[in-house]
Each structure stands twice: as C-alpha cells, then as structure tokens.
Length: 276
Image (cartoon, rainbow, N blue to C red):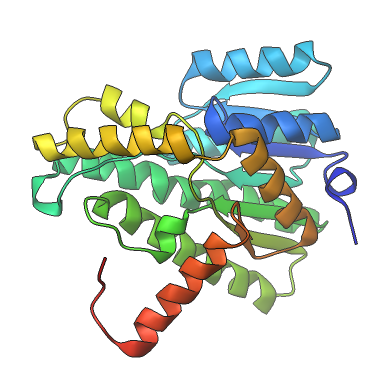
C-alpha cells in the first residue's frame, strides 16, 4: 500500500482556502511530505503569512490571492501554476464559507455569495485544472472538500448544507465521468466532521445575514466547534491518509462519518421525512 509520505513526497499541490484552518493544515502537511504547495486564498494577508511560515520551516510554498468565485481568477491561477511548476499532481478544492439562519430569513446576497464560493468555486477549480491534468496524461488527484453536511439536513443550515450536497453530487458525477474515459485522475470526496476552524467566526465577522436567529445560531455553532472540534492538523492527516489510499469517501471521523452516510441512505430507502 502506498503511504501518505510516498504519495505526496514530490510534485505540486494547489490548496484553495489555505490561508487558515483546515486548508492551512493541509498545505503544511503536504509541504512537510515534500510537495511544492500553492497556498491559494481570497485573503492575501493570510495566504502570505502561511506561505512564509512554510518556507521558513524548509517547505516549498508560494502564496496566490484568488477568489474561487471568479472563474477568470481561477483560470489565471492555473496558468501561473503550470507556468511555474509544469504540472499539478493534487488539486484540493477546500475554500468554503458559512451562513446560518432559517431559509426565509436569509439575505439573498449572502446566499448567492456562499453558493459562488462553495459550489461554483469547486467547478471553477476543476474546469481550470482538470483539462491540463488530462492533457499531461499522468496520474493526478482532484479532492473536493464537502462536509458531513452533504449527507445531513440540520435546521438553520440550509445554505451551507445545500451547497455541500451539491459539491458531493458534483464530485460523484466527476468520478464517473473520468472513469468513463479511463483517465488516470483520482477523485476523492472529503467529508470533514467538526474541525476547529474560523469558518463560523468569519461568517459572524461578515455581518448580519438576515434575522437575529442567524447570529445566535452561528455563535452557538462556533462555541460547539471550539469545544468539540478536531484539531486541524489531526483532520488534515486523516484526510491525506484517505486520499493517499485512493479512497473516494474520505472522512475525518472514521466512525461518525460512515454512520451519517448510512443514516442518509436509510432515510432515502424508507421514504420518511427528515427528523431531528
């Protein structure tokens, strides 16, 4: 079996949303294994800080400022990366944002922004990098970060959950399309559980998304994540181990993740409405 250090000991990785949290931890560990890592993030300051720290510890890392919601910006990222490195061996579409509140209370502008990052951003990443991977014809990996929210339906999470259900469906279709043509590109769907990141803090900092219930919900989720969440480094290690094994389904919680997937399957088979 190929080990994680063997699989990621060389080549180039692009990690979006790598300026903090899970993306930062993924970039750090890929650098540690020996890959050159493009630290891509919409926040130039965060991306630059991460890349400088990784270089200071002997890693090969460069910061790129990119809003994954902008297809031209993602295409520019692909052009620059291939010009600099010649290939991309791992594309990790990790960038994502949060939004809480009941469906009828959500600000439409915030809804659209979330969808443009969480699902459109994954599409833009695949659309920019995959054709170049296919042209090269060498083994490569596309890993799309969804969430256990892609197989659950909690209340006051409609925007985020809808986007992550879309990411999972998109990733399943991508896997089948590449298998159909016999492409040497592995596809993995990453479904993290609770991981201690800034996603809820950033959502709160972005300002009101609708009614007071949104702020209340996000504050509660932030506190719960801080108390119960997995450290980003531990989550990143589990994710990279799963991708290195060649898994399609990659969970950060080896027990809870598959349980939630099974529960979703039973719900669809039974035909009952979702319940708490």
